[in-house]
Length: 585
Ligand code: UDP
Image (tube, rainbow, N blue to C red; front, side, top):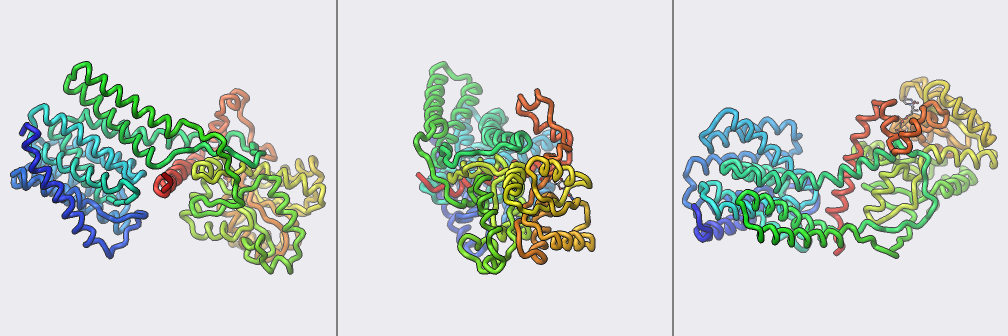
């Protein structure tokens, strides 16, 4: 099958098939709930419709290779549907996906053995890339359109089998229809069902025709392009998480410079991916010089879109920080350490009777007289999304302050910048400075035996604070030992209690403390005592200079590594939130 003209008829039927099955799919799934975010669920219906339409008009529907592809697509659609509906884990589904892919590729191509195995890995990789791209919901359509468009051009230049040409045509049609529909903010959700089906078809087309090189540029590179900023931001946060823990901002106004708008991101991505695809195409078909020139112009154009979309800093756009902002469903107070101290002072001046009648200022405390301050870093925000008990303890807190560059970055990125960070260590020394002057009684709880003593002694020496109790943090939760610690704190009647038990235990402990203490401020301060007591050695000077102090900390405490994996998850959740909720032009 060669000339493009012979593809007009299948093109029309593929379009009709897309629309028909899409409409049917919408009816069938109208009363089902899918936990995929805002938008209407279309699953793989448009892709199946296009495949059916193209196959019928192309007169190859009953050929073995086409039937095998169609059967594979249908089964993967079903597997993906199970994921969308029942939330089966990818690991459970993986063997089934692999089995279906192996069987249908085996039936579609007559070659067996090793080829089928490597082809299956290839297909699963492509599905994985499309899944990553689906972070921005119309990105898979863009990738599919640009990839299939270049294959379409390649197919019109050389001889290829009808099955591959028509399968490619159906993918192209369905993704263009979806793309056109989703302009203007309308959303169609393909879910795993659509991604599995489309990814499998795309892999099959490239394999049937040996045009895999096109996909390397068309799909892998773009997926890596999507992963790159994500990896960059994650590394940046990891670095600052461990690096300069004492750093905090002192300016209430921040310049809002993340001008990353959704439409521009999508336009840029489309153009950029097209350039990459065309480059591979030109190399493959041994194109003449002028073609490279046209590609160069296209690249310059996409670069200019990039510059206006990302690189231009919005000058003079200073945003006044609101009193509270929301990140991933958690309300964070936009305060600097000095302002936190003012709040603590006002809480401590409150009599228990007054505190029990919540006023506007103290409503977050729900009338309890022990005020809870949470220093939340990016990992705590991720945990809040997974752990309802922890989320509730954050919601009941009087203040949730941003501890860590991750939270500040997210606030900037979401367009509601925070004035700066309130790291636990800095907060402890700020509070002790005021406590020394105001005569607040301080209780130190947490850390290994001896650590809290060392930290308290150093702070007492520096600020002259009144220490009313010290207790290490190695006791079993909800045990008689814990009861004894609670009683000890209640008897000491402290104004300030630093609880250094780590997240989320310290927050749960403070929740219990509310029952036996009716006055004071309790602050979860994580590993602060280890830093203040100088138990954790600082990294060598050269490491600090190169900003890799965090690597040293990781070396000292390798158990942190697993927890650090939550940071990319945090970045991912923020990116998803931003790209899928930003409706601004
Ligand atoms: N800790 C404790 N009791 C425990 C577990 C931990 O007192 O049962 C202490 C630990 O010694 C460390 C702090 O709690 O000083 C937790 O620090 P980490 O850096 O792990 O927590 P994060 O600040 O990351 O929440």
